[in-house]
Amino acid sequence: MQLLVTGSIGIDTVISPYGQADGVLGGSAVYFAFAACQYVPVRLVGVVGEDFPAEFKQTLASKNIDLAGLEERAGSKTFRWTGKYQDDVNKRDTLSVDLNVLGEHGPSVPASFADSDIVFLANSHPALQRELLSKITKPKLVVCDTMDLWINIEKESLLETLRMVNGLIINDAEAQMLTDKLNVVEAGEALLTLGPDFVIVKKGEHGALLLTKEGPIAIPAFPSKEVRDPTGAGDSFAGGVLGYLAEQGRFDRDTIRRAMVHGTVAASFTIEDFSLRRVEKLGRDEINQRVDGYINMLQFND
Figure 1 (spheres, rainbow, N blue to C red):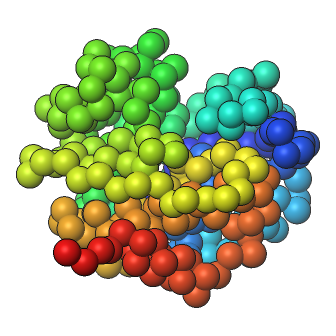
Figure 2 (cartoon, rainbow, N blue to C red):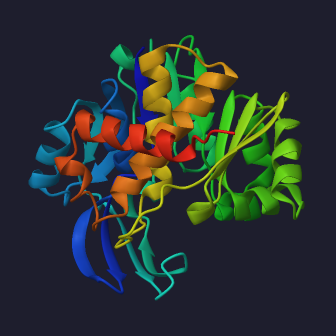
């Protein structure tokens, strides 16, 4: 199945207790694409400025990623973000954000991408998410992400987007904020009433929760020894989930549950080094080996 992602493509500076990475490749669509392309080719739709380094484009082109939807906009600058992780790397401070090209109109969608089967609307303005979706002819599965900013200032627009998607991937704090429910299970169930057929609530080091009308399914996080840079972990998780679903060509509850295992493993690789350094070198055999180990870890005999 043809998989398309749209979202941010940026230049990040990341500071953590383990070091610092300056001016590295980042963005929600990038992390998603690097995880998902291990399963199927990925169509990338995004926009960068004329300052986007040529080596970053080469890095993207070296993977199974179709860059026909990558717009390099003259006279504009690429989105930039600087963040610092505390000693507890679950806590992060955003030091600076320059929206630059992301504050302009959205990217164009190539006509050749209109037949995409699966669409992931990574975090961006809800109106831009709907605008891109309108360019896709007959998608079989549409999943979106969001963030606290849009919940706070564009809630009605976000709710309109949720009525148009099949699935939502969101973190626990955002789920609670959007629904005014403190209990994560209750929050997930409330989100199902807003339009999606399924909701995946990410809980960081505590794993993830799948909510459908049949009830909840919980899976733990992979027990990682090294967490150097959590940036992009959530988008890598989504990439693993949607990549696996595209490969399987099925979207039933059990397949989504299995996809979450692949998403969890994808995120576990991303956090092991700064930016894309770890996942750039990653191969499917290594992914499968960790998936098998993760599944074995969860099995037990009476």
